Image (cartoon, rainbow, N blue to C red):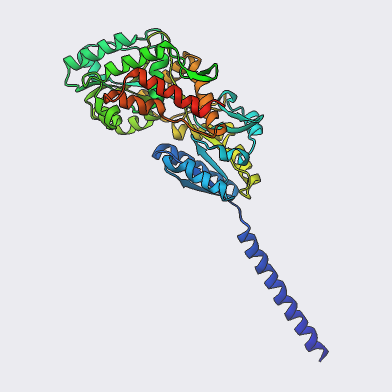
Length: 418
């Protein structure tokens, strides 16, 4: 009888031990952390982040759920999640909302320890609320075949840069001597238009004596831009009606494309019908590009803050960031990073041109980017694309350049002057 009781006790103990082990296994499985990473980007940029996230999972076992969110929906979607108390762990974004401010973690340690460019970070209330993840610049592409066929020279270094009038004259010659339909196209973007304005000596729109204003060179640049949109040098359909300039350039019927570094990898892969090249942009009074790019932000309240910080620090480690930048075609934000873009001769030359443009650019470009992006996070009102939208009206004959400037100044004053 006693043996039977002992045997029963052993069996019960074994069953309890087995159940406990199963319970702990299920708990371990259910407690496994997953980081939700919001990104938006094309096949190149989005794929680069997805590739690096997968690599991190393979190395650490921590799952990174990369959620591809359309660019136009990113700010709204995150804002709704923050308000609901359920933010993503982290995000790559170019837009912000003041509602995020108290939920954004301080990334000062990553900025310092990983040697990230501080001049491109967003600071608020003494904290680093966002650090750059990628860095872009505006630049000029040409259809090399068309220029060569027309016998027209183009810049080959920063020591031989054309003025705007010289550039336009070159475009006219190319269209006259070849079957090019247009001289150039420019993205329908305030960012690209502002670059042209900086090249004319514009200081952008800035606060002075309690209101926003601009300098006379801004009007000169806008007048020049309107003259370019004559359906000969530039097709009005791009800016006035939203036609795709990239497709037009890729067709081989346009001599030049005023866009940016993010096009390089796509052009390397997909332009097969002509030789293209990156060349220095024209200038009127000063040389300038314009800066852009996305930021990395980390949210408090996700429940996985520690795991998220480890992933961010891993991603910004020099060798990992170099791989990310190479995959995504990014200009690096980690100082001293050496990036292998895996591109051919045209692509390699393009990145050299962009780096030369950046080193020669007017200070207004970096200053304007920093102020513009910080205001998205700190101001209750937003004045995005005001210049672009009003210049479309000007091109369509709905208002004068003077009215456009006055409207932009007033919109900025209403949004940003406290």
